[in-house]
Image 1 (cartoon, rainbow, N blue to C red):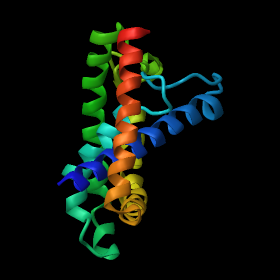
Image 2 (image 1 turned 180 degrees about the vertical axis):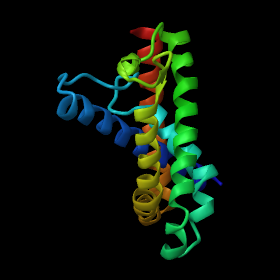
Image 3 (image 1 turned 90 degrees about the vertical axis):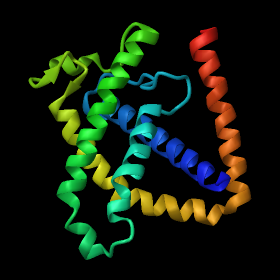
Length: 178
């Protein structure tokens, strides 16, 4: 059980870091606003991406995990819609939590999108979340499974523990000391 918990925490962190990199890429290379830390915490990770990835892993991934490639490909439209819906719901809830805790949420630029709800969610990012979910579950998650399997139980637990301490310290710094 501990190893499973450690693996899922590592998946959470991998996707949180990946999400942070994606956000920074959009900001620097696509929108050309310049670099800022796109996460709500100090470190280079966006926990909302980790939460979304875990939601995908627990709800959608079991549907395709054990199937062969040809069979999995048939599920792409359903996986896309499921990931889009789940991620959009998480983003909406997270915007309210961020507003409650910090007074605002980092993606208020959604007001610039034609189809948005209170600048909290918007159609264009939701479509990207669906596509991202498909990429995560079909490409990245099998690779992440290999990485965590090769680490072994002891190293997986140690790495997860170190990362948990770092994130906990970051949360104390961000929400209590800053």
